[in-house]
Image (cartoon, rainbow, N blue to C red; front, top):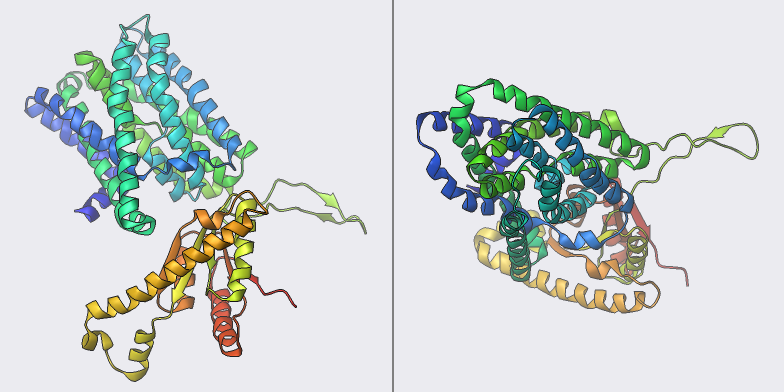
Length: 509
């Protein structure tokens, strides 16, 4: 089931139009009024899973303040007023249609903001902050924007709108955060991220397609009777999205580095249509179906355009490796040669691979210092060589078959538990010393990974699959044998790893 939901979530470009067609056919053939009773359950299912996976702590981390400020200026100072103006222009005598345009342009960011930013190789951490900040501000501000801009045309009950937002945003947000903390407490951060977190977007997708189905089914007969209404809705919606893409791309290219610029685009263009749809249907009664129709059609443009924008990001911003800085020529002292300065790659995620030797104890200070300087996340990794596996391979004996898989896992589990406890104690000791010199010890804040297997294979695999920006390792251990073994691991990692590796030898006595 989870794989099927994941497949749908990855193919929303196809799934949402298909659901809209089925909703339209259902609304034509069958009574759809009873579907309104399913709106609240689907709304909760749509919003709650997204809250479970949000990293709310990221909001309080620095490093991309300019991107955050620019994004929210676009989200709340420009787009809502453009949407309102187009609503008045295109739906002068249909205020609930105009309200649909306003809501479609008013509540910013969704879980897809984070996903599409990741697909485009943008700054995912910045996108997470934009999502949390935009969702919170948008939820609080929406009733007042609607009252201020549409109050002359519609009877807007601020208390009623706020009540719905509490039900469909803040309660799921609190429940989602509580669920997240309980899962992390029970299973640990690693298992939560690898096993549980990937499941929730699929559940959210059920809510999204359910709400879209209901919105289209409720208006199916009206659309069937007047199909030209679809084109009247598509025109202003297309203008809003084209304007937003052009504006955010232009500003991002001028003022921000590549990763932040991509996050800015998806943090401002991607609107939380799910919440807008729920507000429309739950707050404005039967007339809200006109509003919901506009928002439902916005899904088509939003999802399709987001997918296409990913294809053009490298052409717009350059490749994701190292983006050249705009020409800042400086003449060399010895002549007229011009030297072009290039921008240093961003360091946001560091993998510190430790063998728990004396050298690793020295190298960890580099992980702390660099992590603090760049406000980067540091993950501590220790790999336990799988001695039984190596013996099996060398002796030609399948020990898993002889010992049984359960005992095999227990053998490794004991080693993992002891290593993890040792690392925790050493990190606590290191943290106390580091905090005497700098105000933050990122190693103490990060996660601990203890793996079993070939050290070179595991370090390289985790560094590359985890999108780390830097690997830090010590150069050798205590004695000659350990120096040879650790040296061979380091040499293997440097040779095979596509991520930059920083080596830290012990200082000479």
